[in-house]
Length: 194
Image (cartoon, rainbow, N blue to C red; front, side):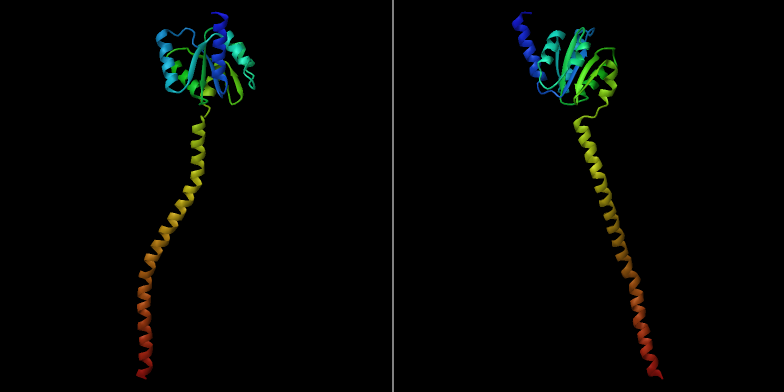
């Protein structure tokens, strides 16, 4: 690879990293061509940008990104590396986990998300369990809707109870109302009989 080619590759990696909030570096070493192609397809379906990169070029590109210190990740850059960029924090980790059901690879080398760096494959489970933005929003909406549902349910139950009471009340009042005129009629008849 010529020096010009390296400069172009570094710039391409920098473009990928520029506004990235979720950056994973995975080890694909040992995956055959078929598995690698399948991994790429799955990444594409999940909107994960994937690029196999040389470690030295990846490190140089990361060093040139302003505002983010990726230096903790550099020690893990050995062997074959795949750069994974995603909008969803846990998507690359879940993709790696799904592939791990069949084989030991791919493995997580390092990840950067939510301004935190994770180094080592032992962090894969933690990263996979991080809730995505959409999941968090869904939970918040559910939590906000729960009290509203309770209030609406209570109001609905009160309306139903009030409606039943109103239906029952006229039926109870009718005999008493009818009995009252009879009593007053008896009262008027009684003095005249004397």
